[in-house]
Image 1 (cartoon, helix red, strand yellow):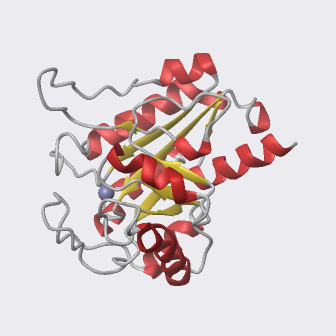
Image 2 (cartoon, helix red, strand yellow):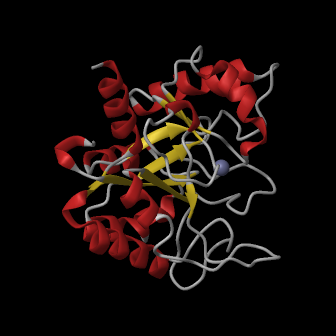
Image 3 (cartoon, rainbow, N blue to C red):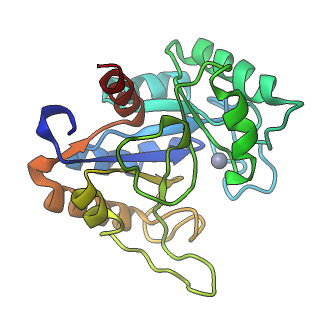
Length: 245
Ligand SMILES: [Zn+2]
């Protein structure tokens, strides 16, 4: 079903690629052997984030050198737009195509995946031009496990959060979608931004560092030898190769 007879797949992505990942999340990745992935705004690598209104505005973003170091540890990267703005028929070349070219030049590596900035509201505009802009896949925030046959152009991600807003105030669940992925041979892509010790930067956009560790420990305890801990670019590459066989 998956390479090496794995039964299901687990990935995690960090939108924006804040430098603070190095002081916090990276420790957990090394401890549990999970590769990470950062979704980068192409025009904002190695500089403070400039997206006014964002909970992460002003936070330092990873540099090329720091991303190189993470890539050597198995991490991957994707494009999160040129400006993090809404993608339209008017600006898609800049936000999808020019951004990918810039990010590939900045990082010196191919960027096969696009990650929707903000929300799913502009998914249709992105889908309409993603292939032309050179992408093999789109990561969204539709909350689901990816079931086979995997649709690379509509990859769902599972928000890993401390608490969602009302009316349900959904609490953190380290088991979220694991049994579904296990039963159906699916692929979980967790989504958060920058887990910090003790308190999340934003309760609906992040978990804490302690919750991240609980999530990794749960994935590893339940998954054992049956889970493929993989980075999304690698999984999409495998899916496309498998489809072509
Ligand atoms: Zn974002």
